[in-house]
Length: 329
Image (cartoon, rainbow, N blue to C red; front, side):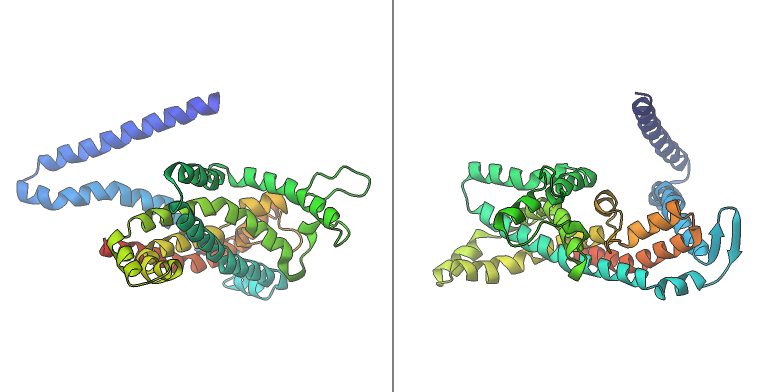
């Protein structure tokens, strides 16, 4: 209860303080001559947000960049230049981690958007009552946290040694099919099979989000264009591929980039299901392990900077996609 009360008090104080700050700024600006107040009005109201952004984001980023050029272990710190980066990119384990991240960004967004688009189109073609039920079931996993979802799927992938009750659905299916002896599938890193099994959790979680956004975009497509295509003899697949898809492509790209950024920072599922073992680690978990478990601040900061460098173009792409959507509207 103490944490809950503390959180409520913090929210109340934050709201009151923010209101008081902007009221004070508005009052001070109103005392100035009209021409000056009109010029300062926008700047004054943007300044608190910019200061907060600098304190919360820019300053820690600069500090992390400096730390990445140092060897910091405990209270000992020493300037080492790009040594941390050199060690990272000459470490075969880290290169394997980069490969895992590449596989995540290559498959998860594409699969998520493809299934989300398919489900959105199919759900829009059923009756209103069925549509609500169908979409609610698909969207339901979005209400589950990543850790909770990891727990659910960990039971699905669970392996029970001979002589113990089988609790994992995957093991039960393998035994029923009789294709092979049961084995701990999350430990199989051949062709990164275990990483793909972890990816399935994120796809399951994000398909609902993809479906909702793309479904709304499909419903916004003018019915006149669809009817015109049907009159010209276009079939369902031609209508979707040549009429609907081009008009919702902006929404599809927005969802794609959002999921892409999400998987670049994926952490919870790796921690909860494998703790990075069996070649399943990714950049975010590698930072966690180096910083919290190994107390190697310099090396961990270098991992963060690599992640920032990889994510920055994606953020730019997302901003550009949103601007393009606004232009189309």
